[in-house]
Length: 261
Ligand code: NAD
Ligand code: MG
Image (cartoon, rainbow, N blue to C red; front, side, top):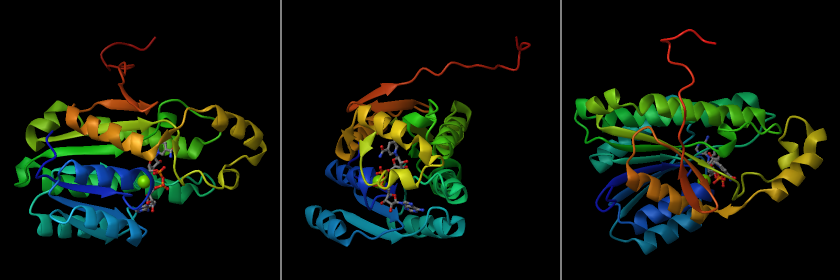
């Protein structure tokens, strides 16, 4: 995918990985970028605009868990930009003690943003098609016992995105869907970690695990996300670890055509 001249949306673009994705999309030449985030990051937004004076950067303060609000946001983006070509859904939280909020933001937010975007992107409704990239995690692939709630939302994101990333749907919509699963990344997400896990008695194990993990920067992960977008492989799932992308071969476990054994 050539980024030059395209219109992109990034959720969670005010900080961490999302901010770096936003920055790199502008460097790669997108014409228009909309950042949807709960928070302001005025200092960074001023810098982004100053560095890219001929590209437009639209900032929308919105909660991805707010379905109506997200629908209205996409309506506004579509009206302002004319079309939407690329969506990177990055917004997410970690707080296993707040099950409801984790479900609504991590899983609900991805669904709200994806489903609202596709209405405007789909070719059977006058759009140009494009690509939607959803943020999961390595813990959405392999259970990590210390974070079951977060892990479940990340597993759900993979299934949701793979369902949409099928060829039948693509033939109608012209939209490709990909999932990225980064390993540990140095951002603000895991601050006050022990206060946000369900079983604080596991916190010693937790710190041992966290210390041992490979760590990469948000910039490294964002660079990998841009190369995933460039590959345009519908339905693909990638691990992002050690600053590299690794495409996953996911075996079909059930076909419905033969008895289970
Ligand atoms: P971060 O906390 O630095 O950034 C998250 C951004 O999302 C923030 O700008 C925040 O304001 C925004 N956000 C949070 N809730 C929102 C909501 N309801 N509506 C709109 N915006 C909201 O964290 P990060 O590490 O950059 O995480 C970004 C994504 O990457 C998350 O989905 C996270 O689960 C995922 N991820 C992170 C890691 C990691 O190790 N940091 C690893 C794998 C996946
Ligand atoms: Mg982020």
